[in-house]
Image (cartoon, rainbow, N blue to C red; front, side, top):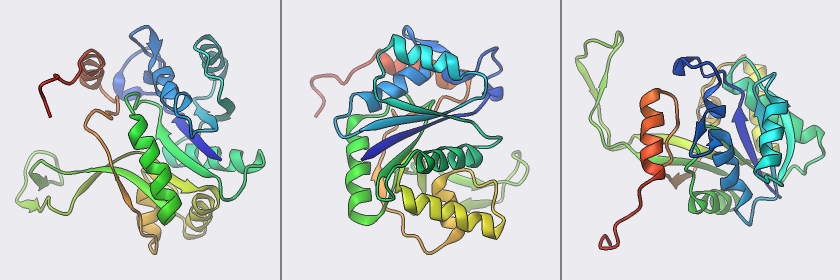
Length: 238
């Protein structure tokens, strides 16, 4: 089975609003519902699980009922960090009896414009190679700065990948990574791909992402999201 594991455990403090950003409404629905619909509509996704900010579980279930998210099977409690939330999700799936070889597509709740093609590519790549990480090549010139105000060092962009989600693993592989991290005292890795990189010995295969697969973190991101939702490719473009 292929399971969408949606990480919605953050409080969204950087957005500075009264409600968590994943529950903010855009185009008549909360952002998280737009995200869940991406997985609901994909024929190869069997179940959806959400790691939810504590205290918002009932709100989430109500919205899921309203918008007919029938694949939502589990709501797990969020953690104090992204890594802890993912831990809660994958161990929740294990305790729920899912098979070690089931694929888990770990995705940010605030990336609501995920394409069906990226989901399909994640599943195919993970089946073929064992790991799949969505990413896009870096186009910007990169400077390194310790204070955010000055720099004397540039980092070549040719080999840099900007990662996105989903990031896809078999349930047994991602649990094994978290078990090893626990043994090594790694508790604050920012993403599953960075965790695997820190642990070493795991070759992660890149699935082409999209600039439209935006992560809503700031008010500017919200404005961009609204614009992307109301635009389409001109017919004359190849």
